[in-house]
Length: 328
Image 1 (cartoon, rainbow, N blue to C red):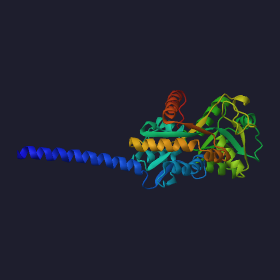
Image 2 (spheres, rainbow, N blue to C red; image 1 turned 90 degrees about the horizontal axis):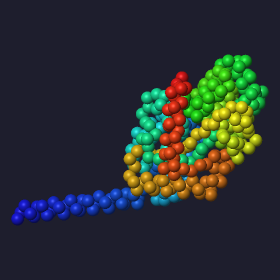
Image 3 (cartoon, rainbow, N blue to C red; image 1 turned 45 degrees about the vertical axis):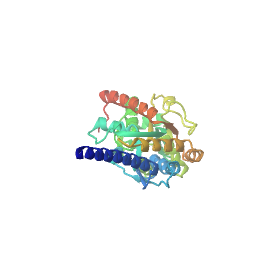
Image 4 (cartoon, one colour; image 1 turned 30 degrees about the horizontal axis):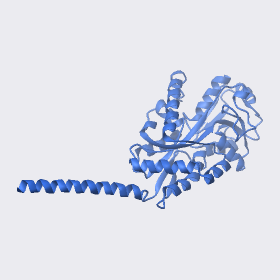
């Protein structure tokens, strides 16, 4: 009889514990977030990713509720690998999220040993799709890509090209252009596009491989730079007067997706809350108006569509690596 009594007590205890755990989980999800959320940007302050991060953070806070607070933190270096790694290694509790940038996110693990892969993240949503561009100091006599090729052929290796790191969309664009034009240029990697801009303005660089949206932001801010061409399929509405590379005889397309993710393994309810908050922020009229002022080429992709883009990019880069590895 005592044995049956003990079994009954144990069973009731287990049931009570299960109910308590369920209530705790529900309360936790309902109360999220209960402390500040860190948003990691894998590039330096003042760059395109940094600007969009600081722009959208308040809109995500509003949609999360619970007096949510997001703190943007820059972890720049190694073409983005430092920031991507820190994000991957963080606890999957919803209190660390961050931006993923293509192609760096995918090209770095292909090129060298990395402590992350894009599949090691819970995708939240893509926000920006920014075409690449070649930019020069406004005082530079080079007016278009034809002039650039002429100068590069006359001065082998003297055309310095600044990028946001080895394996970045900027770096790969430079390599594509070298092959297409039959020229040799010198790659100079930086921690972010703001540093590339500085390199152009101080004369350290001949060309800045800067995305269209970033270049337009800097130009609006007074930077004396201009674009030689944009790497989109057709002229973007952001820069209707800048010819594409294809228009100038170079069949090239390049762009960078910038989206949000978290470490793999988020609680389902927390992930759902983050995905919904970002989706709502991405279509908020206030956000879209401010993004337009920053010349940010917005393109929201839900996690499923975002994943398809990354799968496609990975396939293309793996094929490219076989024929034209970009390792320096």
